[in-house]
Length: 385
Image 1 (cartoon, rainbow, N blue to C red):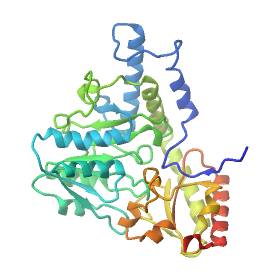
Image 2: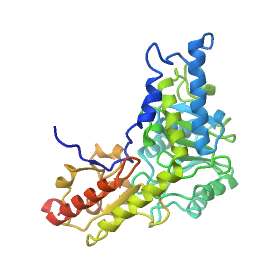
Image 3: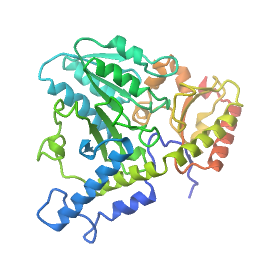
Image 4: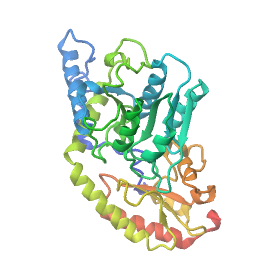
Protein backbone atom coordinates (compact mmCIF):
# COMPACT_ATOMS: atom_id res chain seq x y z
CA UNK A 1 0.00 0.00 0.00
CA UNK A 2 1.36 3.41 -0.95
CA UNK A 3 2.28 5.77 1.86
CA UNK A 4 -0.27 8.55 2.22
CA UNK A 5 0.95 12.08 1.46
CA UNK A 6 1.55 14.63 4.20
CA UNK A 7 -1.69 16.42 5.04
CA UNK A 8 -1.55 20.20 4.68
CA UNK A 9 -5.15 20.90 3.71
CA UNK A 10 -6.85 21.48 7.07
CA UNK A 11 -8.64 24.54 5.65
CA UNK A 12 -10.50 22.22 3.25
CA UNK A 13 -11.50 19.79 5.99
CA UNK A 14 -10.17 18.38 9.22
CA UNK A 15 -10.07 14.74 10.30
CA UNK A 16 -12.63 14.01 12.99
CA UNK A 17 -10.97 13.91 16.39
CA UNK A 18 -11.09 10.43 17.95
CA UNK A 19 -12.77 11.91 21.06
CA UNK A 20 -15.47 13.32 18.81
CA UNK A 21 -15.92 9.99 17.05
CA UNK A 22 -16.46 8.33 20.43
CA UNK A 23 -19.40 10.54 21.44
CA UNK A 24 -20.80 10.41 17.92
CA UNK A 25 -20.86 6.60 17.83
CA UNK A 26 -22.59 6.52 21.20
CA UNK A 27 -25.63 8.06 19.48
CA UNK A 28 -25.94 5.22 16.95
CA UNK A 29 -27.47 1.77 17.32
CA UNK A 30 -30.19 0.42 19.58
CA UNK A 31 -27.98 0.37 22.67
CA UNK A 32 -27.06 4.02 22.15
CA UNK A 33 -28.70 7.43 22.32
CA UNK A 34 -30.54 7.03 19.00
CA UNK A 35 -33.92 8.61 19.76
CA UNK A 36 -35.59 11.44 17.87
CA UNK A 37 -35.03 14.65 19.86
CA UNK A 38 -38.55 15.78 18.95
CA UNK A 39 -40.13 12.70 20.58
CA UNK A 40 -40.77 14.25 23.95
CA UNK A 41 -43.25 11.63 25.19
CA UNK A 42 -40.68 8.94 26.04
CA UNK A 43 -37.21 8.49 27.49
CA UNK A 44 -35.46 7.83 24.17
CA UNK A 45 -36.49 11.18 22.74
CA UNK A 46 -35.93 13.01 26.01
CA UNK A 47 -32.38 11.68 26.30
CA UNK A 48 -31.65 12.70 22.71
CA UNK A 49 -33.06 16.18 23.36
CA UNK A 50 -30.86 16.56 26.43
CA UNK A 51 -27.79 15.69 24.35
CA UNK A 52 -28.79 18.13 21.62
CA UNK A 53 -29.21 20.94 24.13
CA UNK A 54 -25.89 20.16 25.78
CA UNK A 55 -24.23 20.41 22.36
CA UNK A 56 -26.01 23.71 21.75
CA UNK A 57 -24.50 25.02 24.99
CA UNK A 58 -21.05 23.80 23.98
CA UNK A 59 -21.19 25.60 20.64
CA UNK A 60 -22.54 28.75 22.27
CA UNK A 61 -19.83 28.78 24.94
CA UNK A 62 -17.00 28.78 22.39
CA UNK A 63 -18.34 31.89 20.66
CA UNK A 64 -19.85 33.86 23.55
CA UNK A 65 -23.48 33.33 22.54
CA UNK A 66 -26.57 32.15 24.38
CA UNK A 67 -27.65 28.56 23.63
CA UNK A 68 -31.06 29.73 22.40
CA UNK A 69 -29.29 31.80 19.73
CA UNK A 70 -27.76 28.72 18.05
CA UNK A 71 -29.76 27.18 15.16
CA UNK A 72 -28.62 23.82 13.78
CA UNK A 73 -28.05 23.53 10.02
CA UNK A 74 -26.30 21.11 7.68
CA UNK A 75 -23.18 23.27 7.53
CA UNK A 76 -21.89 26.76 6.89
CA UNK A 77 -23.20 26.77 3.32
CA UNK A 78 -26.77 26.30 4.52
CA UNK A 79 -26.19 28.81 7.33
CA UNK A 80 -24.99 31.37 4.81
CA UNK A 81 -28.00 30.76 2.58
CA UNK A 82 -30.39 31.04 5.52
CA UNK A 83 -28.77 34.29 6.65
CA UNK A 84 -28.73 36.08 3.29
CA UNK A 85 -31.94 34.77 1.75
CA UNK A 86 -33.79 34.75 5.05
CA UNK A 87 -33.03 38.40 5.76
CA UNK A 88 -33.73 39.49 2.18
CA UNK A 89 -37.10 37.71 2.06
CA UNK A 90 -38.15 38.88 5.53
CA UNK A 91 -38.06 42.49 4.33
CA UNK A 92 -41.24 41.80 2.39
CA UNK A 93 -40.36 44.26 -0.36
CA UNK A 94 -38.32 43.98 -3.53
CA UNK A 95 -35.01 45.72 -4.01
CA UNK A 96 -32.75 47.00 -1.29
CA UNK A 97 -28.98 46.73 -1.09
CA UNK A 98 -26.49 44.33 0.45
CA UNK A 99 -22.71 44.52 0.77
CA UNK A 100 -20.24 41.66 0.56
CA UNK A 101 -16.75 41.30 -0.91
CA UNK A 102 -15.01 39.82 -3.91
CA UNK A 103 -13.06 37.36 -1.75
CA UNK A 104 -15.92 35.63 0.06
CA UNK A 105 -16.55 31.90 -0.09
CA UNK A 106 -18.66 30.74 -3.03
CA UNK A 107 -21.48 29.98 -0.59
CA UNK A 108 -21.80 33.74 -0.12
CA UNK A 109 -20.95 34.87 -3.66
CA UNK A 110 -23.36 32.47 -5.35
CA UNK A 111 -26.13 33.32 -2.89
CA UNK A 112 -25.54 37.04 -3.41
CA UNK A 113 -25.72 36.48 -7.16
CA UNK A 114 -29.08 34.72 -6.75
CA UNK A 115 -30.39 37.68 -4.74
CA UNK A 116 -28.99 40.05 -7.33
CA UNK A 117 -30.86 38.19 -10.06
CA UNK A 118 -34.01 38.60 -7.94
CA UNK A 119 -33.62 42.38 -7.85
CA UNK A 120 -31.42 43.07 -4.82
CA UNK A 121 -28.52 45.47 -5.46
CA UNK A 122 -25.18 43.99 -4.40
CA UNK A 123 -21.85 45.74 -3.82
CA UNK A 124 -18.77 43.51 -3.96
CA UNK A 125 -15.98 45.24 -2.03
CA UNK A 126 -12.42 45.00 -3.31
CA UNK A 127 -9.89 43.87 -0.69
CA UNK A 128 -6.91 46.05 0.12
CA UNK A 129 -3.36 44.96 -0.73
CA UNK A 130 -3.24 42.84 2.44
CA UNK A 131 -6.37 40.90 1.53
CA UNK A 132 -8.51 42.69 4.11
CA UNK A 133 -11.88 44.43 3.97
CA UNK A 134 -11.52 47.64 5.94
CA UNK A 135 -14.19 49.32 8.08
CA UNK A 136 -13.76 52.45 5.95
CA UNK A 137 -14.52 50.52 2.77
CA UNK A 138 -17.73 49.22 4.32
CA UNK A 139 -18.76 52.70 5.48
CA UNK A 140 -18.20 54.18 2.03
CA UNK A 141 -20.31 51.45 0.41
CA UNK A 142 -23.31 51.87 2.75
CA UNK A 143 -26.50 53.29 1.23
CA UNK A 144 -29.82 54.39 2.63
CA UNK A 145 -31.36 51.10 1.48
CA UNK A 146 -28.52 48.84 2.72
CA UNK A 147 -30.16 46.20 4.90
CA UNK A 148 -27.38 43.58 5.19
CA UNK A 149 -23.60 43.32 5.15
CA UNK A 150 -22.00 39.86 4.87
CA UNK A 151 -18.24 39.38 5.33
CA UNK A 152 -16.07 36.50 6.46
CA UNK A 153 -14.08 36.53 9.68
CA UNK A 154 -11.13 34.55 8.27
CA UNK A 155 -10.46 34.24 4.56
CA UNK A 156 -10.39 30.58 3.62
CA UNK A 157 -7.52 30.93 1.13
CA UNK A 158 -5.34 33.62 2.69
CA UNK A 159 -5.93 33.15 6.40
CA UNK A 160 -6.37 36.92 6.83
CA UNK A 161 -8.62 38.15 9.65
CA UNK A 162 -11.04 41.04 9.15
CA UNK A 163 -11.64 43.50 11.99
CA UNK A 164 -15.17 42.27 12.59
CA UNK A 165 -15.93 44.32 15.74
CA UNK A 166 -14.96 47.58 14.00
CA UNK A 167 -16.85 46.73 10.82
CA UNK A 168 -19.86 45.61 12.82
CA UNK A 169 -20.06 48.91 14.64
CA UNK A 170 -20.11 50.79 11.32
CA UNK A 171 -22.92 48.55 10.11
CA UNK A 172 -24.92 48.87 13.31
CA UNK A 173 -24.62 52.65 13.24
CA UNK A 174 -26.48 52.51 9.93
CA UNK A 175 -29.18 50.15 11.27
CA UNK A 176 -28.32 47.30 8.88
CA UNK A 177 -27.81 43.69 9.91
CA UNK A 178 -24.31 42.17 9.91
CA UNK A 179 -23.68 38.54 8.95
CA UNK A 180 -20.27 36.92 9.38
CA UNK A 181 -19.11 33.64 7.85
CA UNK A 182 -16.92 32.21 10.64
CA UNK A 183 -16.41 28.72 9.22
CA UNK A 184 -12.63 29.24 9.16
CA UNK A 185 -12.49 31.32 12.34
CA UNK A 186 -14.22 29.31 15.06
CA UNK A 187 -11.65 27.76 17.38
CA UNK A 188 -8.85 29.83 15.83
CA UNK A 189 -9.99 33.37 16.66
CA UNK A 190 -11.42 34.38 20.05
CA UNK A 191 -15.06 35.18 19.22
CA UNK A 192 -17.30 36.99 21.70
CA UNK A 193 -20.79 37.44 20.33
CA UNK A 194 -21.93 38.88 23.65
CA UNK A 195 -19.77 41.92 22.84
CA UNK A 196 -19.30 41.92 19.07
CA UNK A 197 -21.86 43.92 17.03
CA UNK A 198 -22.73 40.89 14.90
CA UNK A 199 -26.28 39.74 14.16
CA UNK A 200 -25.74 36.45 12.33
CA UNK A 201 -22.73 34.12 12.24
CA UNK A 202 -22.19 30.85 10.37
CA UNK A 203 -20.26 27.82 11.66
CA UNK A 204 -19.28 24.39 10.33
CA UNK A 205 -18.20 21.34 12.35
CA UNK A 206 -15.88 19.80 9.79
CA UNK A 207 -13.48 22.76 9.88
CA UNK A 208 -12.98 22.08 13.61
CA UNK A 209 -12.40 18.30 13.88
CA UNK A 210 -16.09 17.46 13.78
CA UNK A 211 -18.06 15.57 11.10
CA UNK A 212 -19.24 16.88 7.77
CA UNK A 213 -22.91 17.64 7.28
CA UNK A 214 -23.55 19.65 10.45
CA UNK A 215 -23.24 23.35 11.19
CA UNK A 216 -25.00 26.18 12.94
CA UNK A 217 -26.17 29.74 12.53
CA UNK A 218 -26.01 32.23 15.38
CA UNK A 219 -29.12 34.44 15.32
CA UNK A 220 -28.75 37.51 17.52
CA UNK A 221 -31.58 39.56 19.00
CA UNK A 222 -31.65 42.14 16.18
CA UNK A 223 -32.05 39.39 13.58
CA UNK A 224 -34.62 37.17 15.27
CA UNK A 225 -37.63 38.98 13.83
CA UNK A 226 -35.91 39.76 10.52
CA UNK A 227 -35.18 36.23 9.28
CA UNK A 228 -37.40 33.84 7.31
CA UNK A 229 -36.88 30.06 7.25
CA UNK A 230 -35.69 28.47 4.01
CA UNK A 231 -36.59 24.86 4.91
CA UNK A 232 -40.14 24.12 6.07
CA UNK A 233 -41.82 21.12 7.59
CA UNK A 234 -42.36 20.76 11.31
CA UNK A 235 -41.17 24.07 12.69
CA UNK A 236 -37.99 22.75 14.30
CA UNK A 237 -35.32 25.12 15.63
CA UNK A 238 -37.74 27.85 16.58
CA UNK A 239 -39.33 27.68 13.14
CA UNK A 240 -36.09 28.66 11.40
CA UNK A 241 -34.92 25.25 10.18
CA UNK A 242 -37.25 22.28 9.92
CA UNK A 243 -36.06 18.69 9.80
CA UNK A 244 -35.37 15.86 12.25
CA UNK A 245 -32.28 16.76 14.23
CA UNK A 246 -29.28 14.48 13.60
CA UNK A 247 -28.37 13.76 17.22
CA UNK A 248 -25.08 12.00 16.41
CA UNK A 249 -23.81 14.87 14.27
CA UNK A 250 -25.02 17.58 16.66
CA UNK A 251 -23.43 15.88 19.69
CA UNK A 252 -20.21 15.53 17.70
CA UNK A 253 -20.19 19.22 16.77
CA UNK A 254 -20.74 20.14 20.40
CA UNK A 255 -17.84 17.96 21.52
CA UNK A 256 -15.60 19.37 18.80
CA UNK A 257 -16.35 22.93 19.87
CA UNK A 258 -15.84 22.04 23.55
CA UNK A 259 -12.46 20.50 22.77
CA UNK A 260 -11.49 23.59 20.79
CA UNK A 261 -12.40 25.82 23.73
CA UNK A 262 -10.37 23.73 26.18
CA UNK A 263 -7.27 23.65 23.96
CA UNK A 264 -7.56 27.14 22.43
CA UNK A 265 -4.38 28.72 23.84
CA UNK A 266 -2.30 25.56 23.66
CA UNK A 267 -3.20 24.85 20.04
CA UNK A 268 -2.63 28.44 18.97
CA UNK A 269 0.86 28.39 20.49
CA UNK A 270 1.64 25.11 18.74
CA UNK A 271 0.39 26.27 15.34
CA UNK A 272 2.33 29.54 15.59
CA UNK A 273 5.50 27.55 16.31
CA UNK A 274 4.90 25.21 13.38
CA UNK A 275 4.06 28.09 11.03
CA UNK A 276 7.28 29.92 11.92
CA UNK A 277 9.30 26.73 11.49
CA UNK A 278 7.82 26.22 8.02
CA UNK A 279 8.20 29.81 6.84
CA UNK A 280 11.78 30.00 8.06
CA UNK A 281 12.64 27.17 5.71
CA UNK A 282 10.47 28.21 2.77
CA UNK A 283 11.62 31.83 2.78
CA UNK A 284 15.07 30.56 1.81
CA UNK A 285 13.58 29.86 -1.64
CA UNK A 286 14.30 32.87 -3.89
CA UNK A 287 11.24 34.96 -4.68
CA UNK A 288 8.66 33.09 -2.61
CA UNK A 289 6.08 35.46 -1.13
CA UNK A 290 3.26 35.24 1.37
CA UNK A 291 -0.13 36.47 0.19
CA UNK A 292 -2.18 38.58 2.56
CA UNK A 293 -1.39 40.51 5.70
CA UNK A 294 1.68 39.17 7.52
CA UNK A 295 0.22 40.11 10.90
CA UNK A 296 -3.59 40.26 10.73
CA UNK A 297 -4.05 36.55 10.14
CA UNK A 298 -4.46 33.16 11.74
CA UNK A 299 -1.27 31.05 11.81
CA UNK A 300 -3.02 28.00 10.36
CA UNK A 301 -3.35 29.04 6.70
CA UNK A 302 -0.59 30.16 4.35
CA UNK A 303 -0.95 31.23 0.71
CA UNK A 304 2.43 31.20 -1.02
CA UNK A 305 3.31 32.29 -4.56
CA UNK A 306 6.51 31.07 -6.22
CA UNK A 307 8.59 32.58 -9.00
CA UNK A 308 7.75 31.57 -12.52
CA UNK A 309 9.58 28.45 -13.67
CA UNK A 310 10.65 27.57 -10.12
CA UNK A 311 7.97 25.19 -8.95
CA UNK A 312 7.02 21.61 -9.87
CA UNK A 313 3.49 21.06 -8.66
CA UNK A 314 3.23 17.65 -10.33
CA UNK A 315 6.03 16.24 -8.20
CA UNK A 316 4.75 17.88 -5.03
CA UNK A 317 1.15 16.65 -5.28
CA UNK A 318 2.30 13.05 -4.93
CA UNK A 319 3.85 13.81 -1.54
CA UNK A 320 1.82 16.63 0.03
CA UNK A 321 -1.94 17.14 0.18
CA UNK A 322 -2.48 20.87 -0.37
CA UNK A 323 -4.77 23.20 -2.31
CA UNK A 324 -4.15 25.65 -5.10
CA UNK A 325 -7.48 27.34 -4.29
CA UNK A 326 -10.43 26.69 -2.01
CA UNK A 327 -11.86 23.15 -2.09
CA UNK A 328 -15.11 24.46 -3.60
CA UNK A 329 -13.20 25.95 -6.55
CA UNK A 330 -10.94 22.98 -7.27
CA UNK A 331 -13.40 21.09 -9.47
CA UNK A 332 -13.66 23.97 -11.93
CA UNK A 333 -9.88 24.20 -12.33
CA UNK A 334 -10.30 27.99 -12.57
CA UNK A 335 -7.85 30.49 -11.08
CA UNK A 336 -8.62 31.48 -7.51
CA UNK A 337 -11.07 34.39 -7.45
CA UNK A 338 -9.43 35.48 -4.20
CA UNK A 339 -5.98 35.78 -5.78
CA UNK A 340 -7.41 37.52 -8.84
CA UNK A 341 -9.09 40.06 -6.54
CA UNK A 342 -5.70 40.68 -4.90
CA UNK A 343 -4.24 41.58 -8.29
CA UNK A 344 -2.64 38.27 -9.29
CA UNK A 345 -2.97 37.30 -12.91
CA UNK A 346 -3.90 33.74 -13.87
CA UNK A 347 -0.24 32.76 -14.26
CA UNK A 348 0.69 33.96 -10.78
CA UNK A 349 -2.39 32.27 -9.35
CA UNK A 350 -1.30 29.02 -10.96
CA UNK A 351 2.02 29.27 -9.09
CA UNK A 352 0.31 29.68 -5.73
CA UNK A 353 -0.38 27.00 -3.16
CA UNK A 354 -2.34 27.03 0.09
CA UNK A 355 -0.77 25.13 2.97
CA UNK A 356 -2.96 24.79 6.05
CA UNK A 357 -1.82 23.36 9.37
CA UNK A 358 -3.84 21.75 12.14
CA UNK A 359 -4.09 19.77 15.35
CA UNK A 360 -2.26 16.73 14.05
CA UNK A 361 0.56 18.50 12.18
CA UNK A 362 3.98 17.65 13.62
CA UNK A 363 7.45 19.19 13.40
CA UNK A 364 8.46 16.19 11.31
CA UNK A 365 5.63 16.96 8.88
CA UNK A 366 6.82 20.57 8.66
CA UNK A 367 10.43 19.63 7.94
CA UNK A 368 9.49 16.98 5.39
CA UNK A 369 7.12 19.35 3.62
CA UNK A 370 9.76 22.07 3.47
CA UNK A 371 12.28 19.66 1.97
CA UNK A 372 9.79 18.45 -0.62
CA UNK A 373 8.80 21.98 -1.63
CA UNK A 374 12.46 22.99 -1.97
CA UNK A 375 13.07 19.94 -4.15
CA UNK A 376 10.05 20.80 -6.29
CA UNK A 377 11.41 24.30 -6.79
CA UNK A 378 14.84 22.99 -7.68
CA UNK A 379 13.42 20.79 -10.45
CA UNK A 380 11.84 23.86 -12.12
CA UNK A 381 10.02 22.23 -15.07
CA UNK A 382 8.38 23.98 -17.96
CA UNK A 383 5.02 23.04 -16.38
CA UNK A 384 4.64 26.53 -14.92
CA UNK A 385 5.94 28.41 -17.96
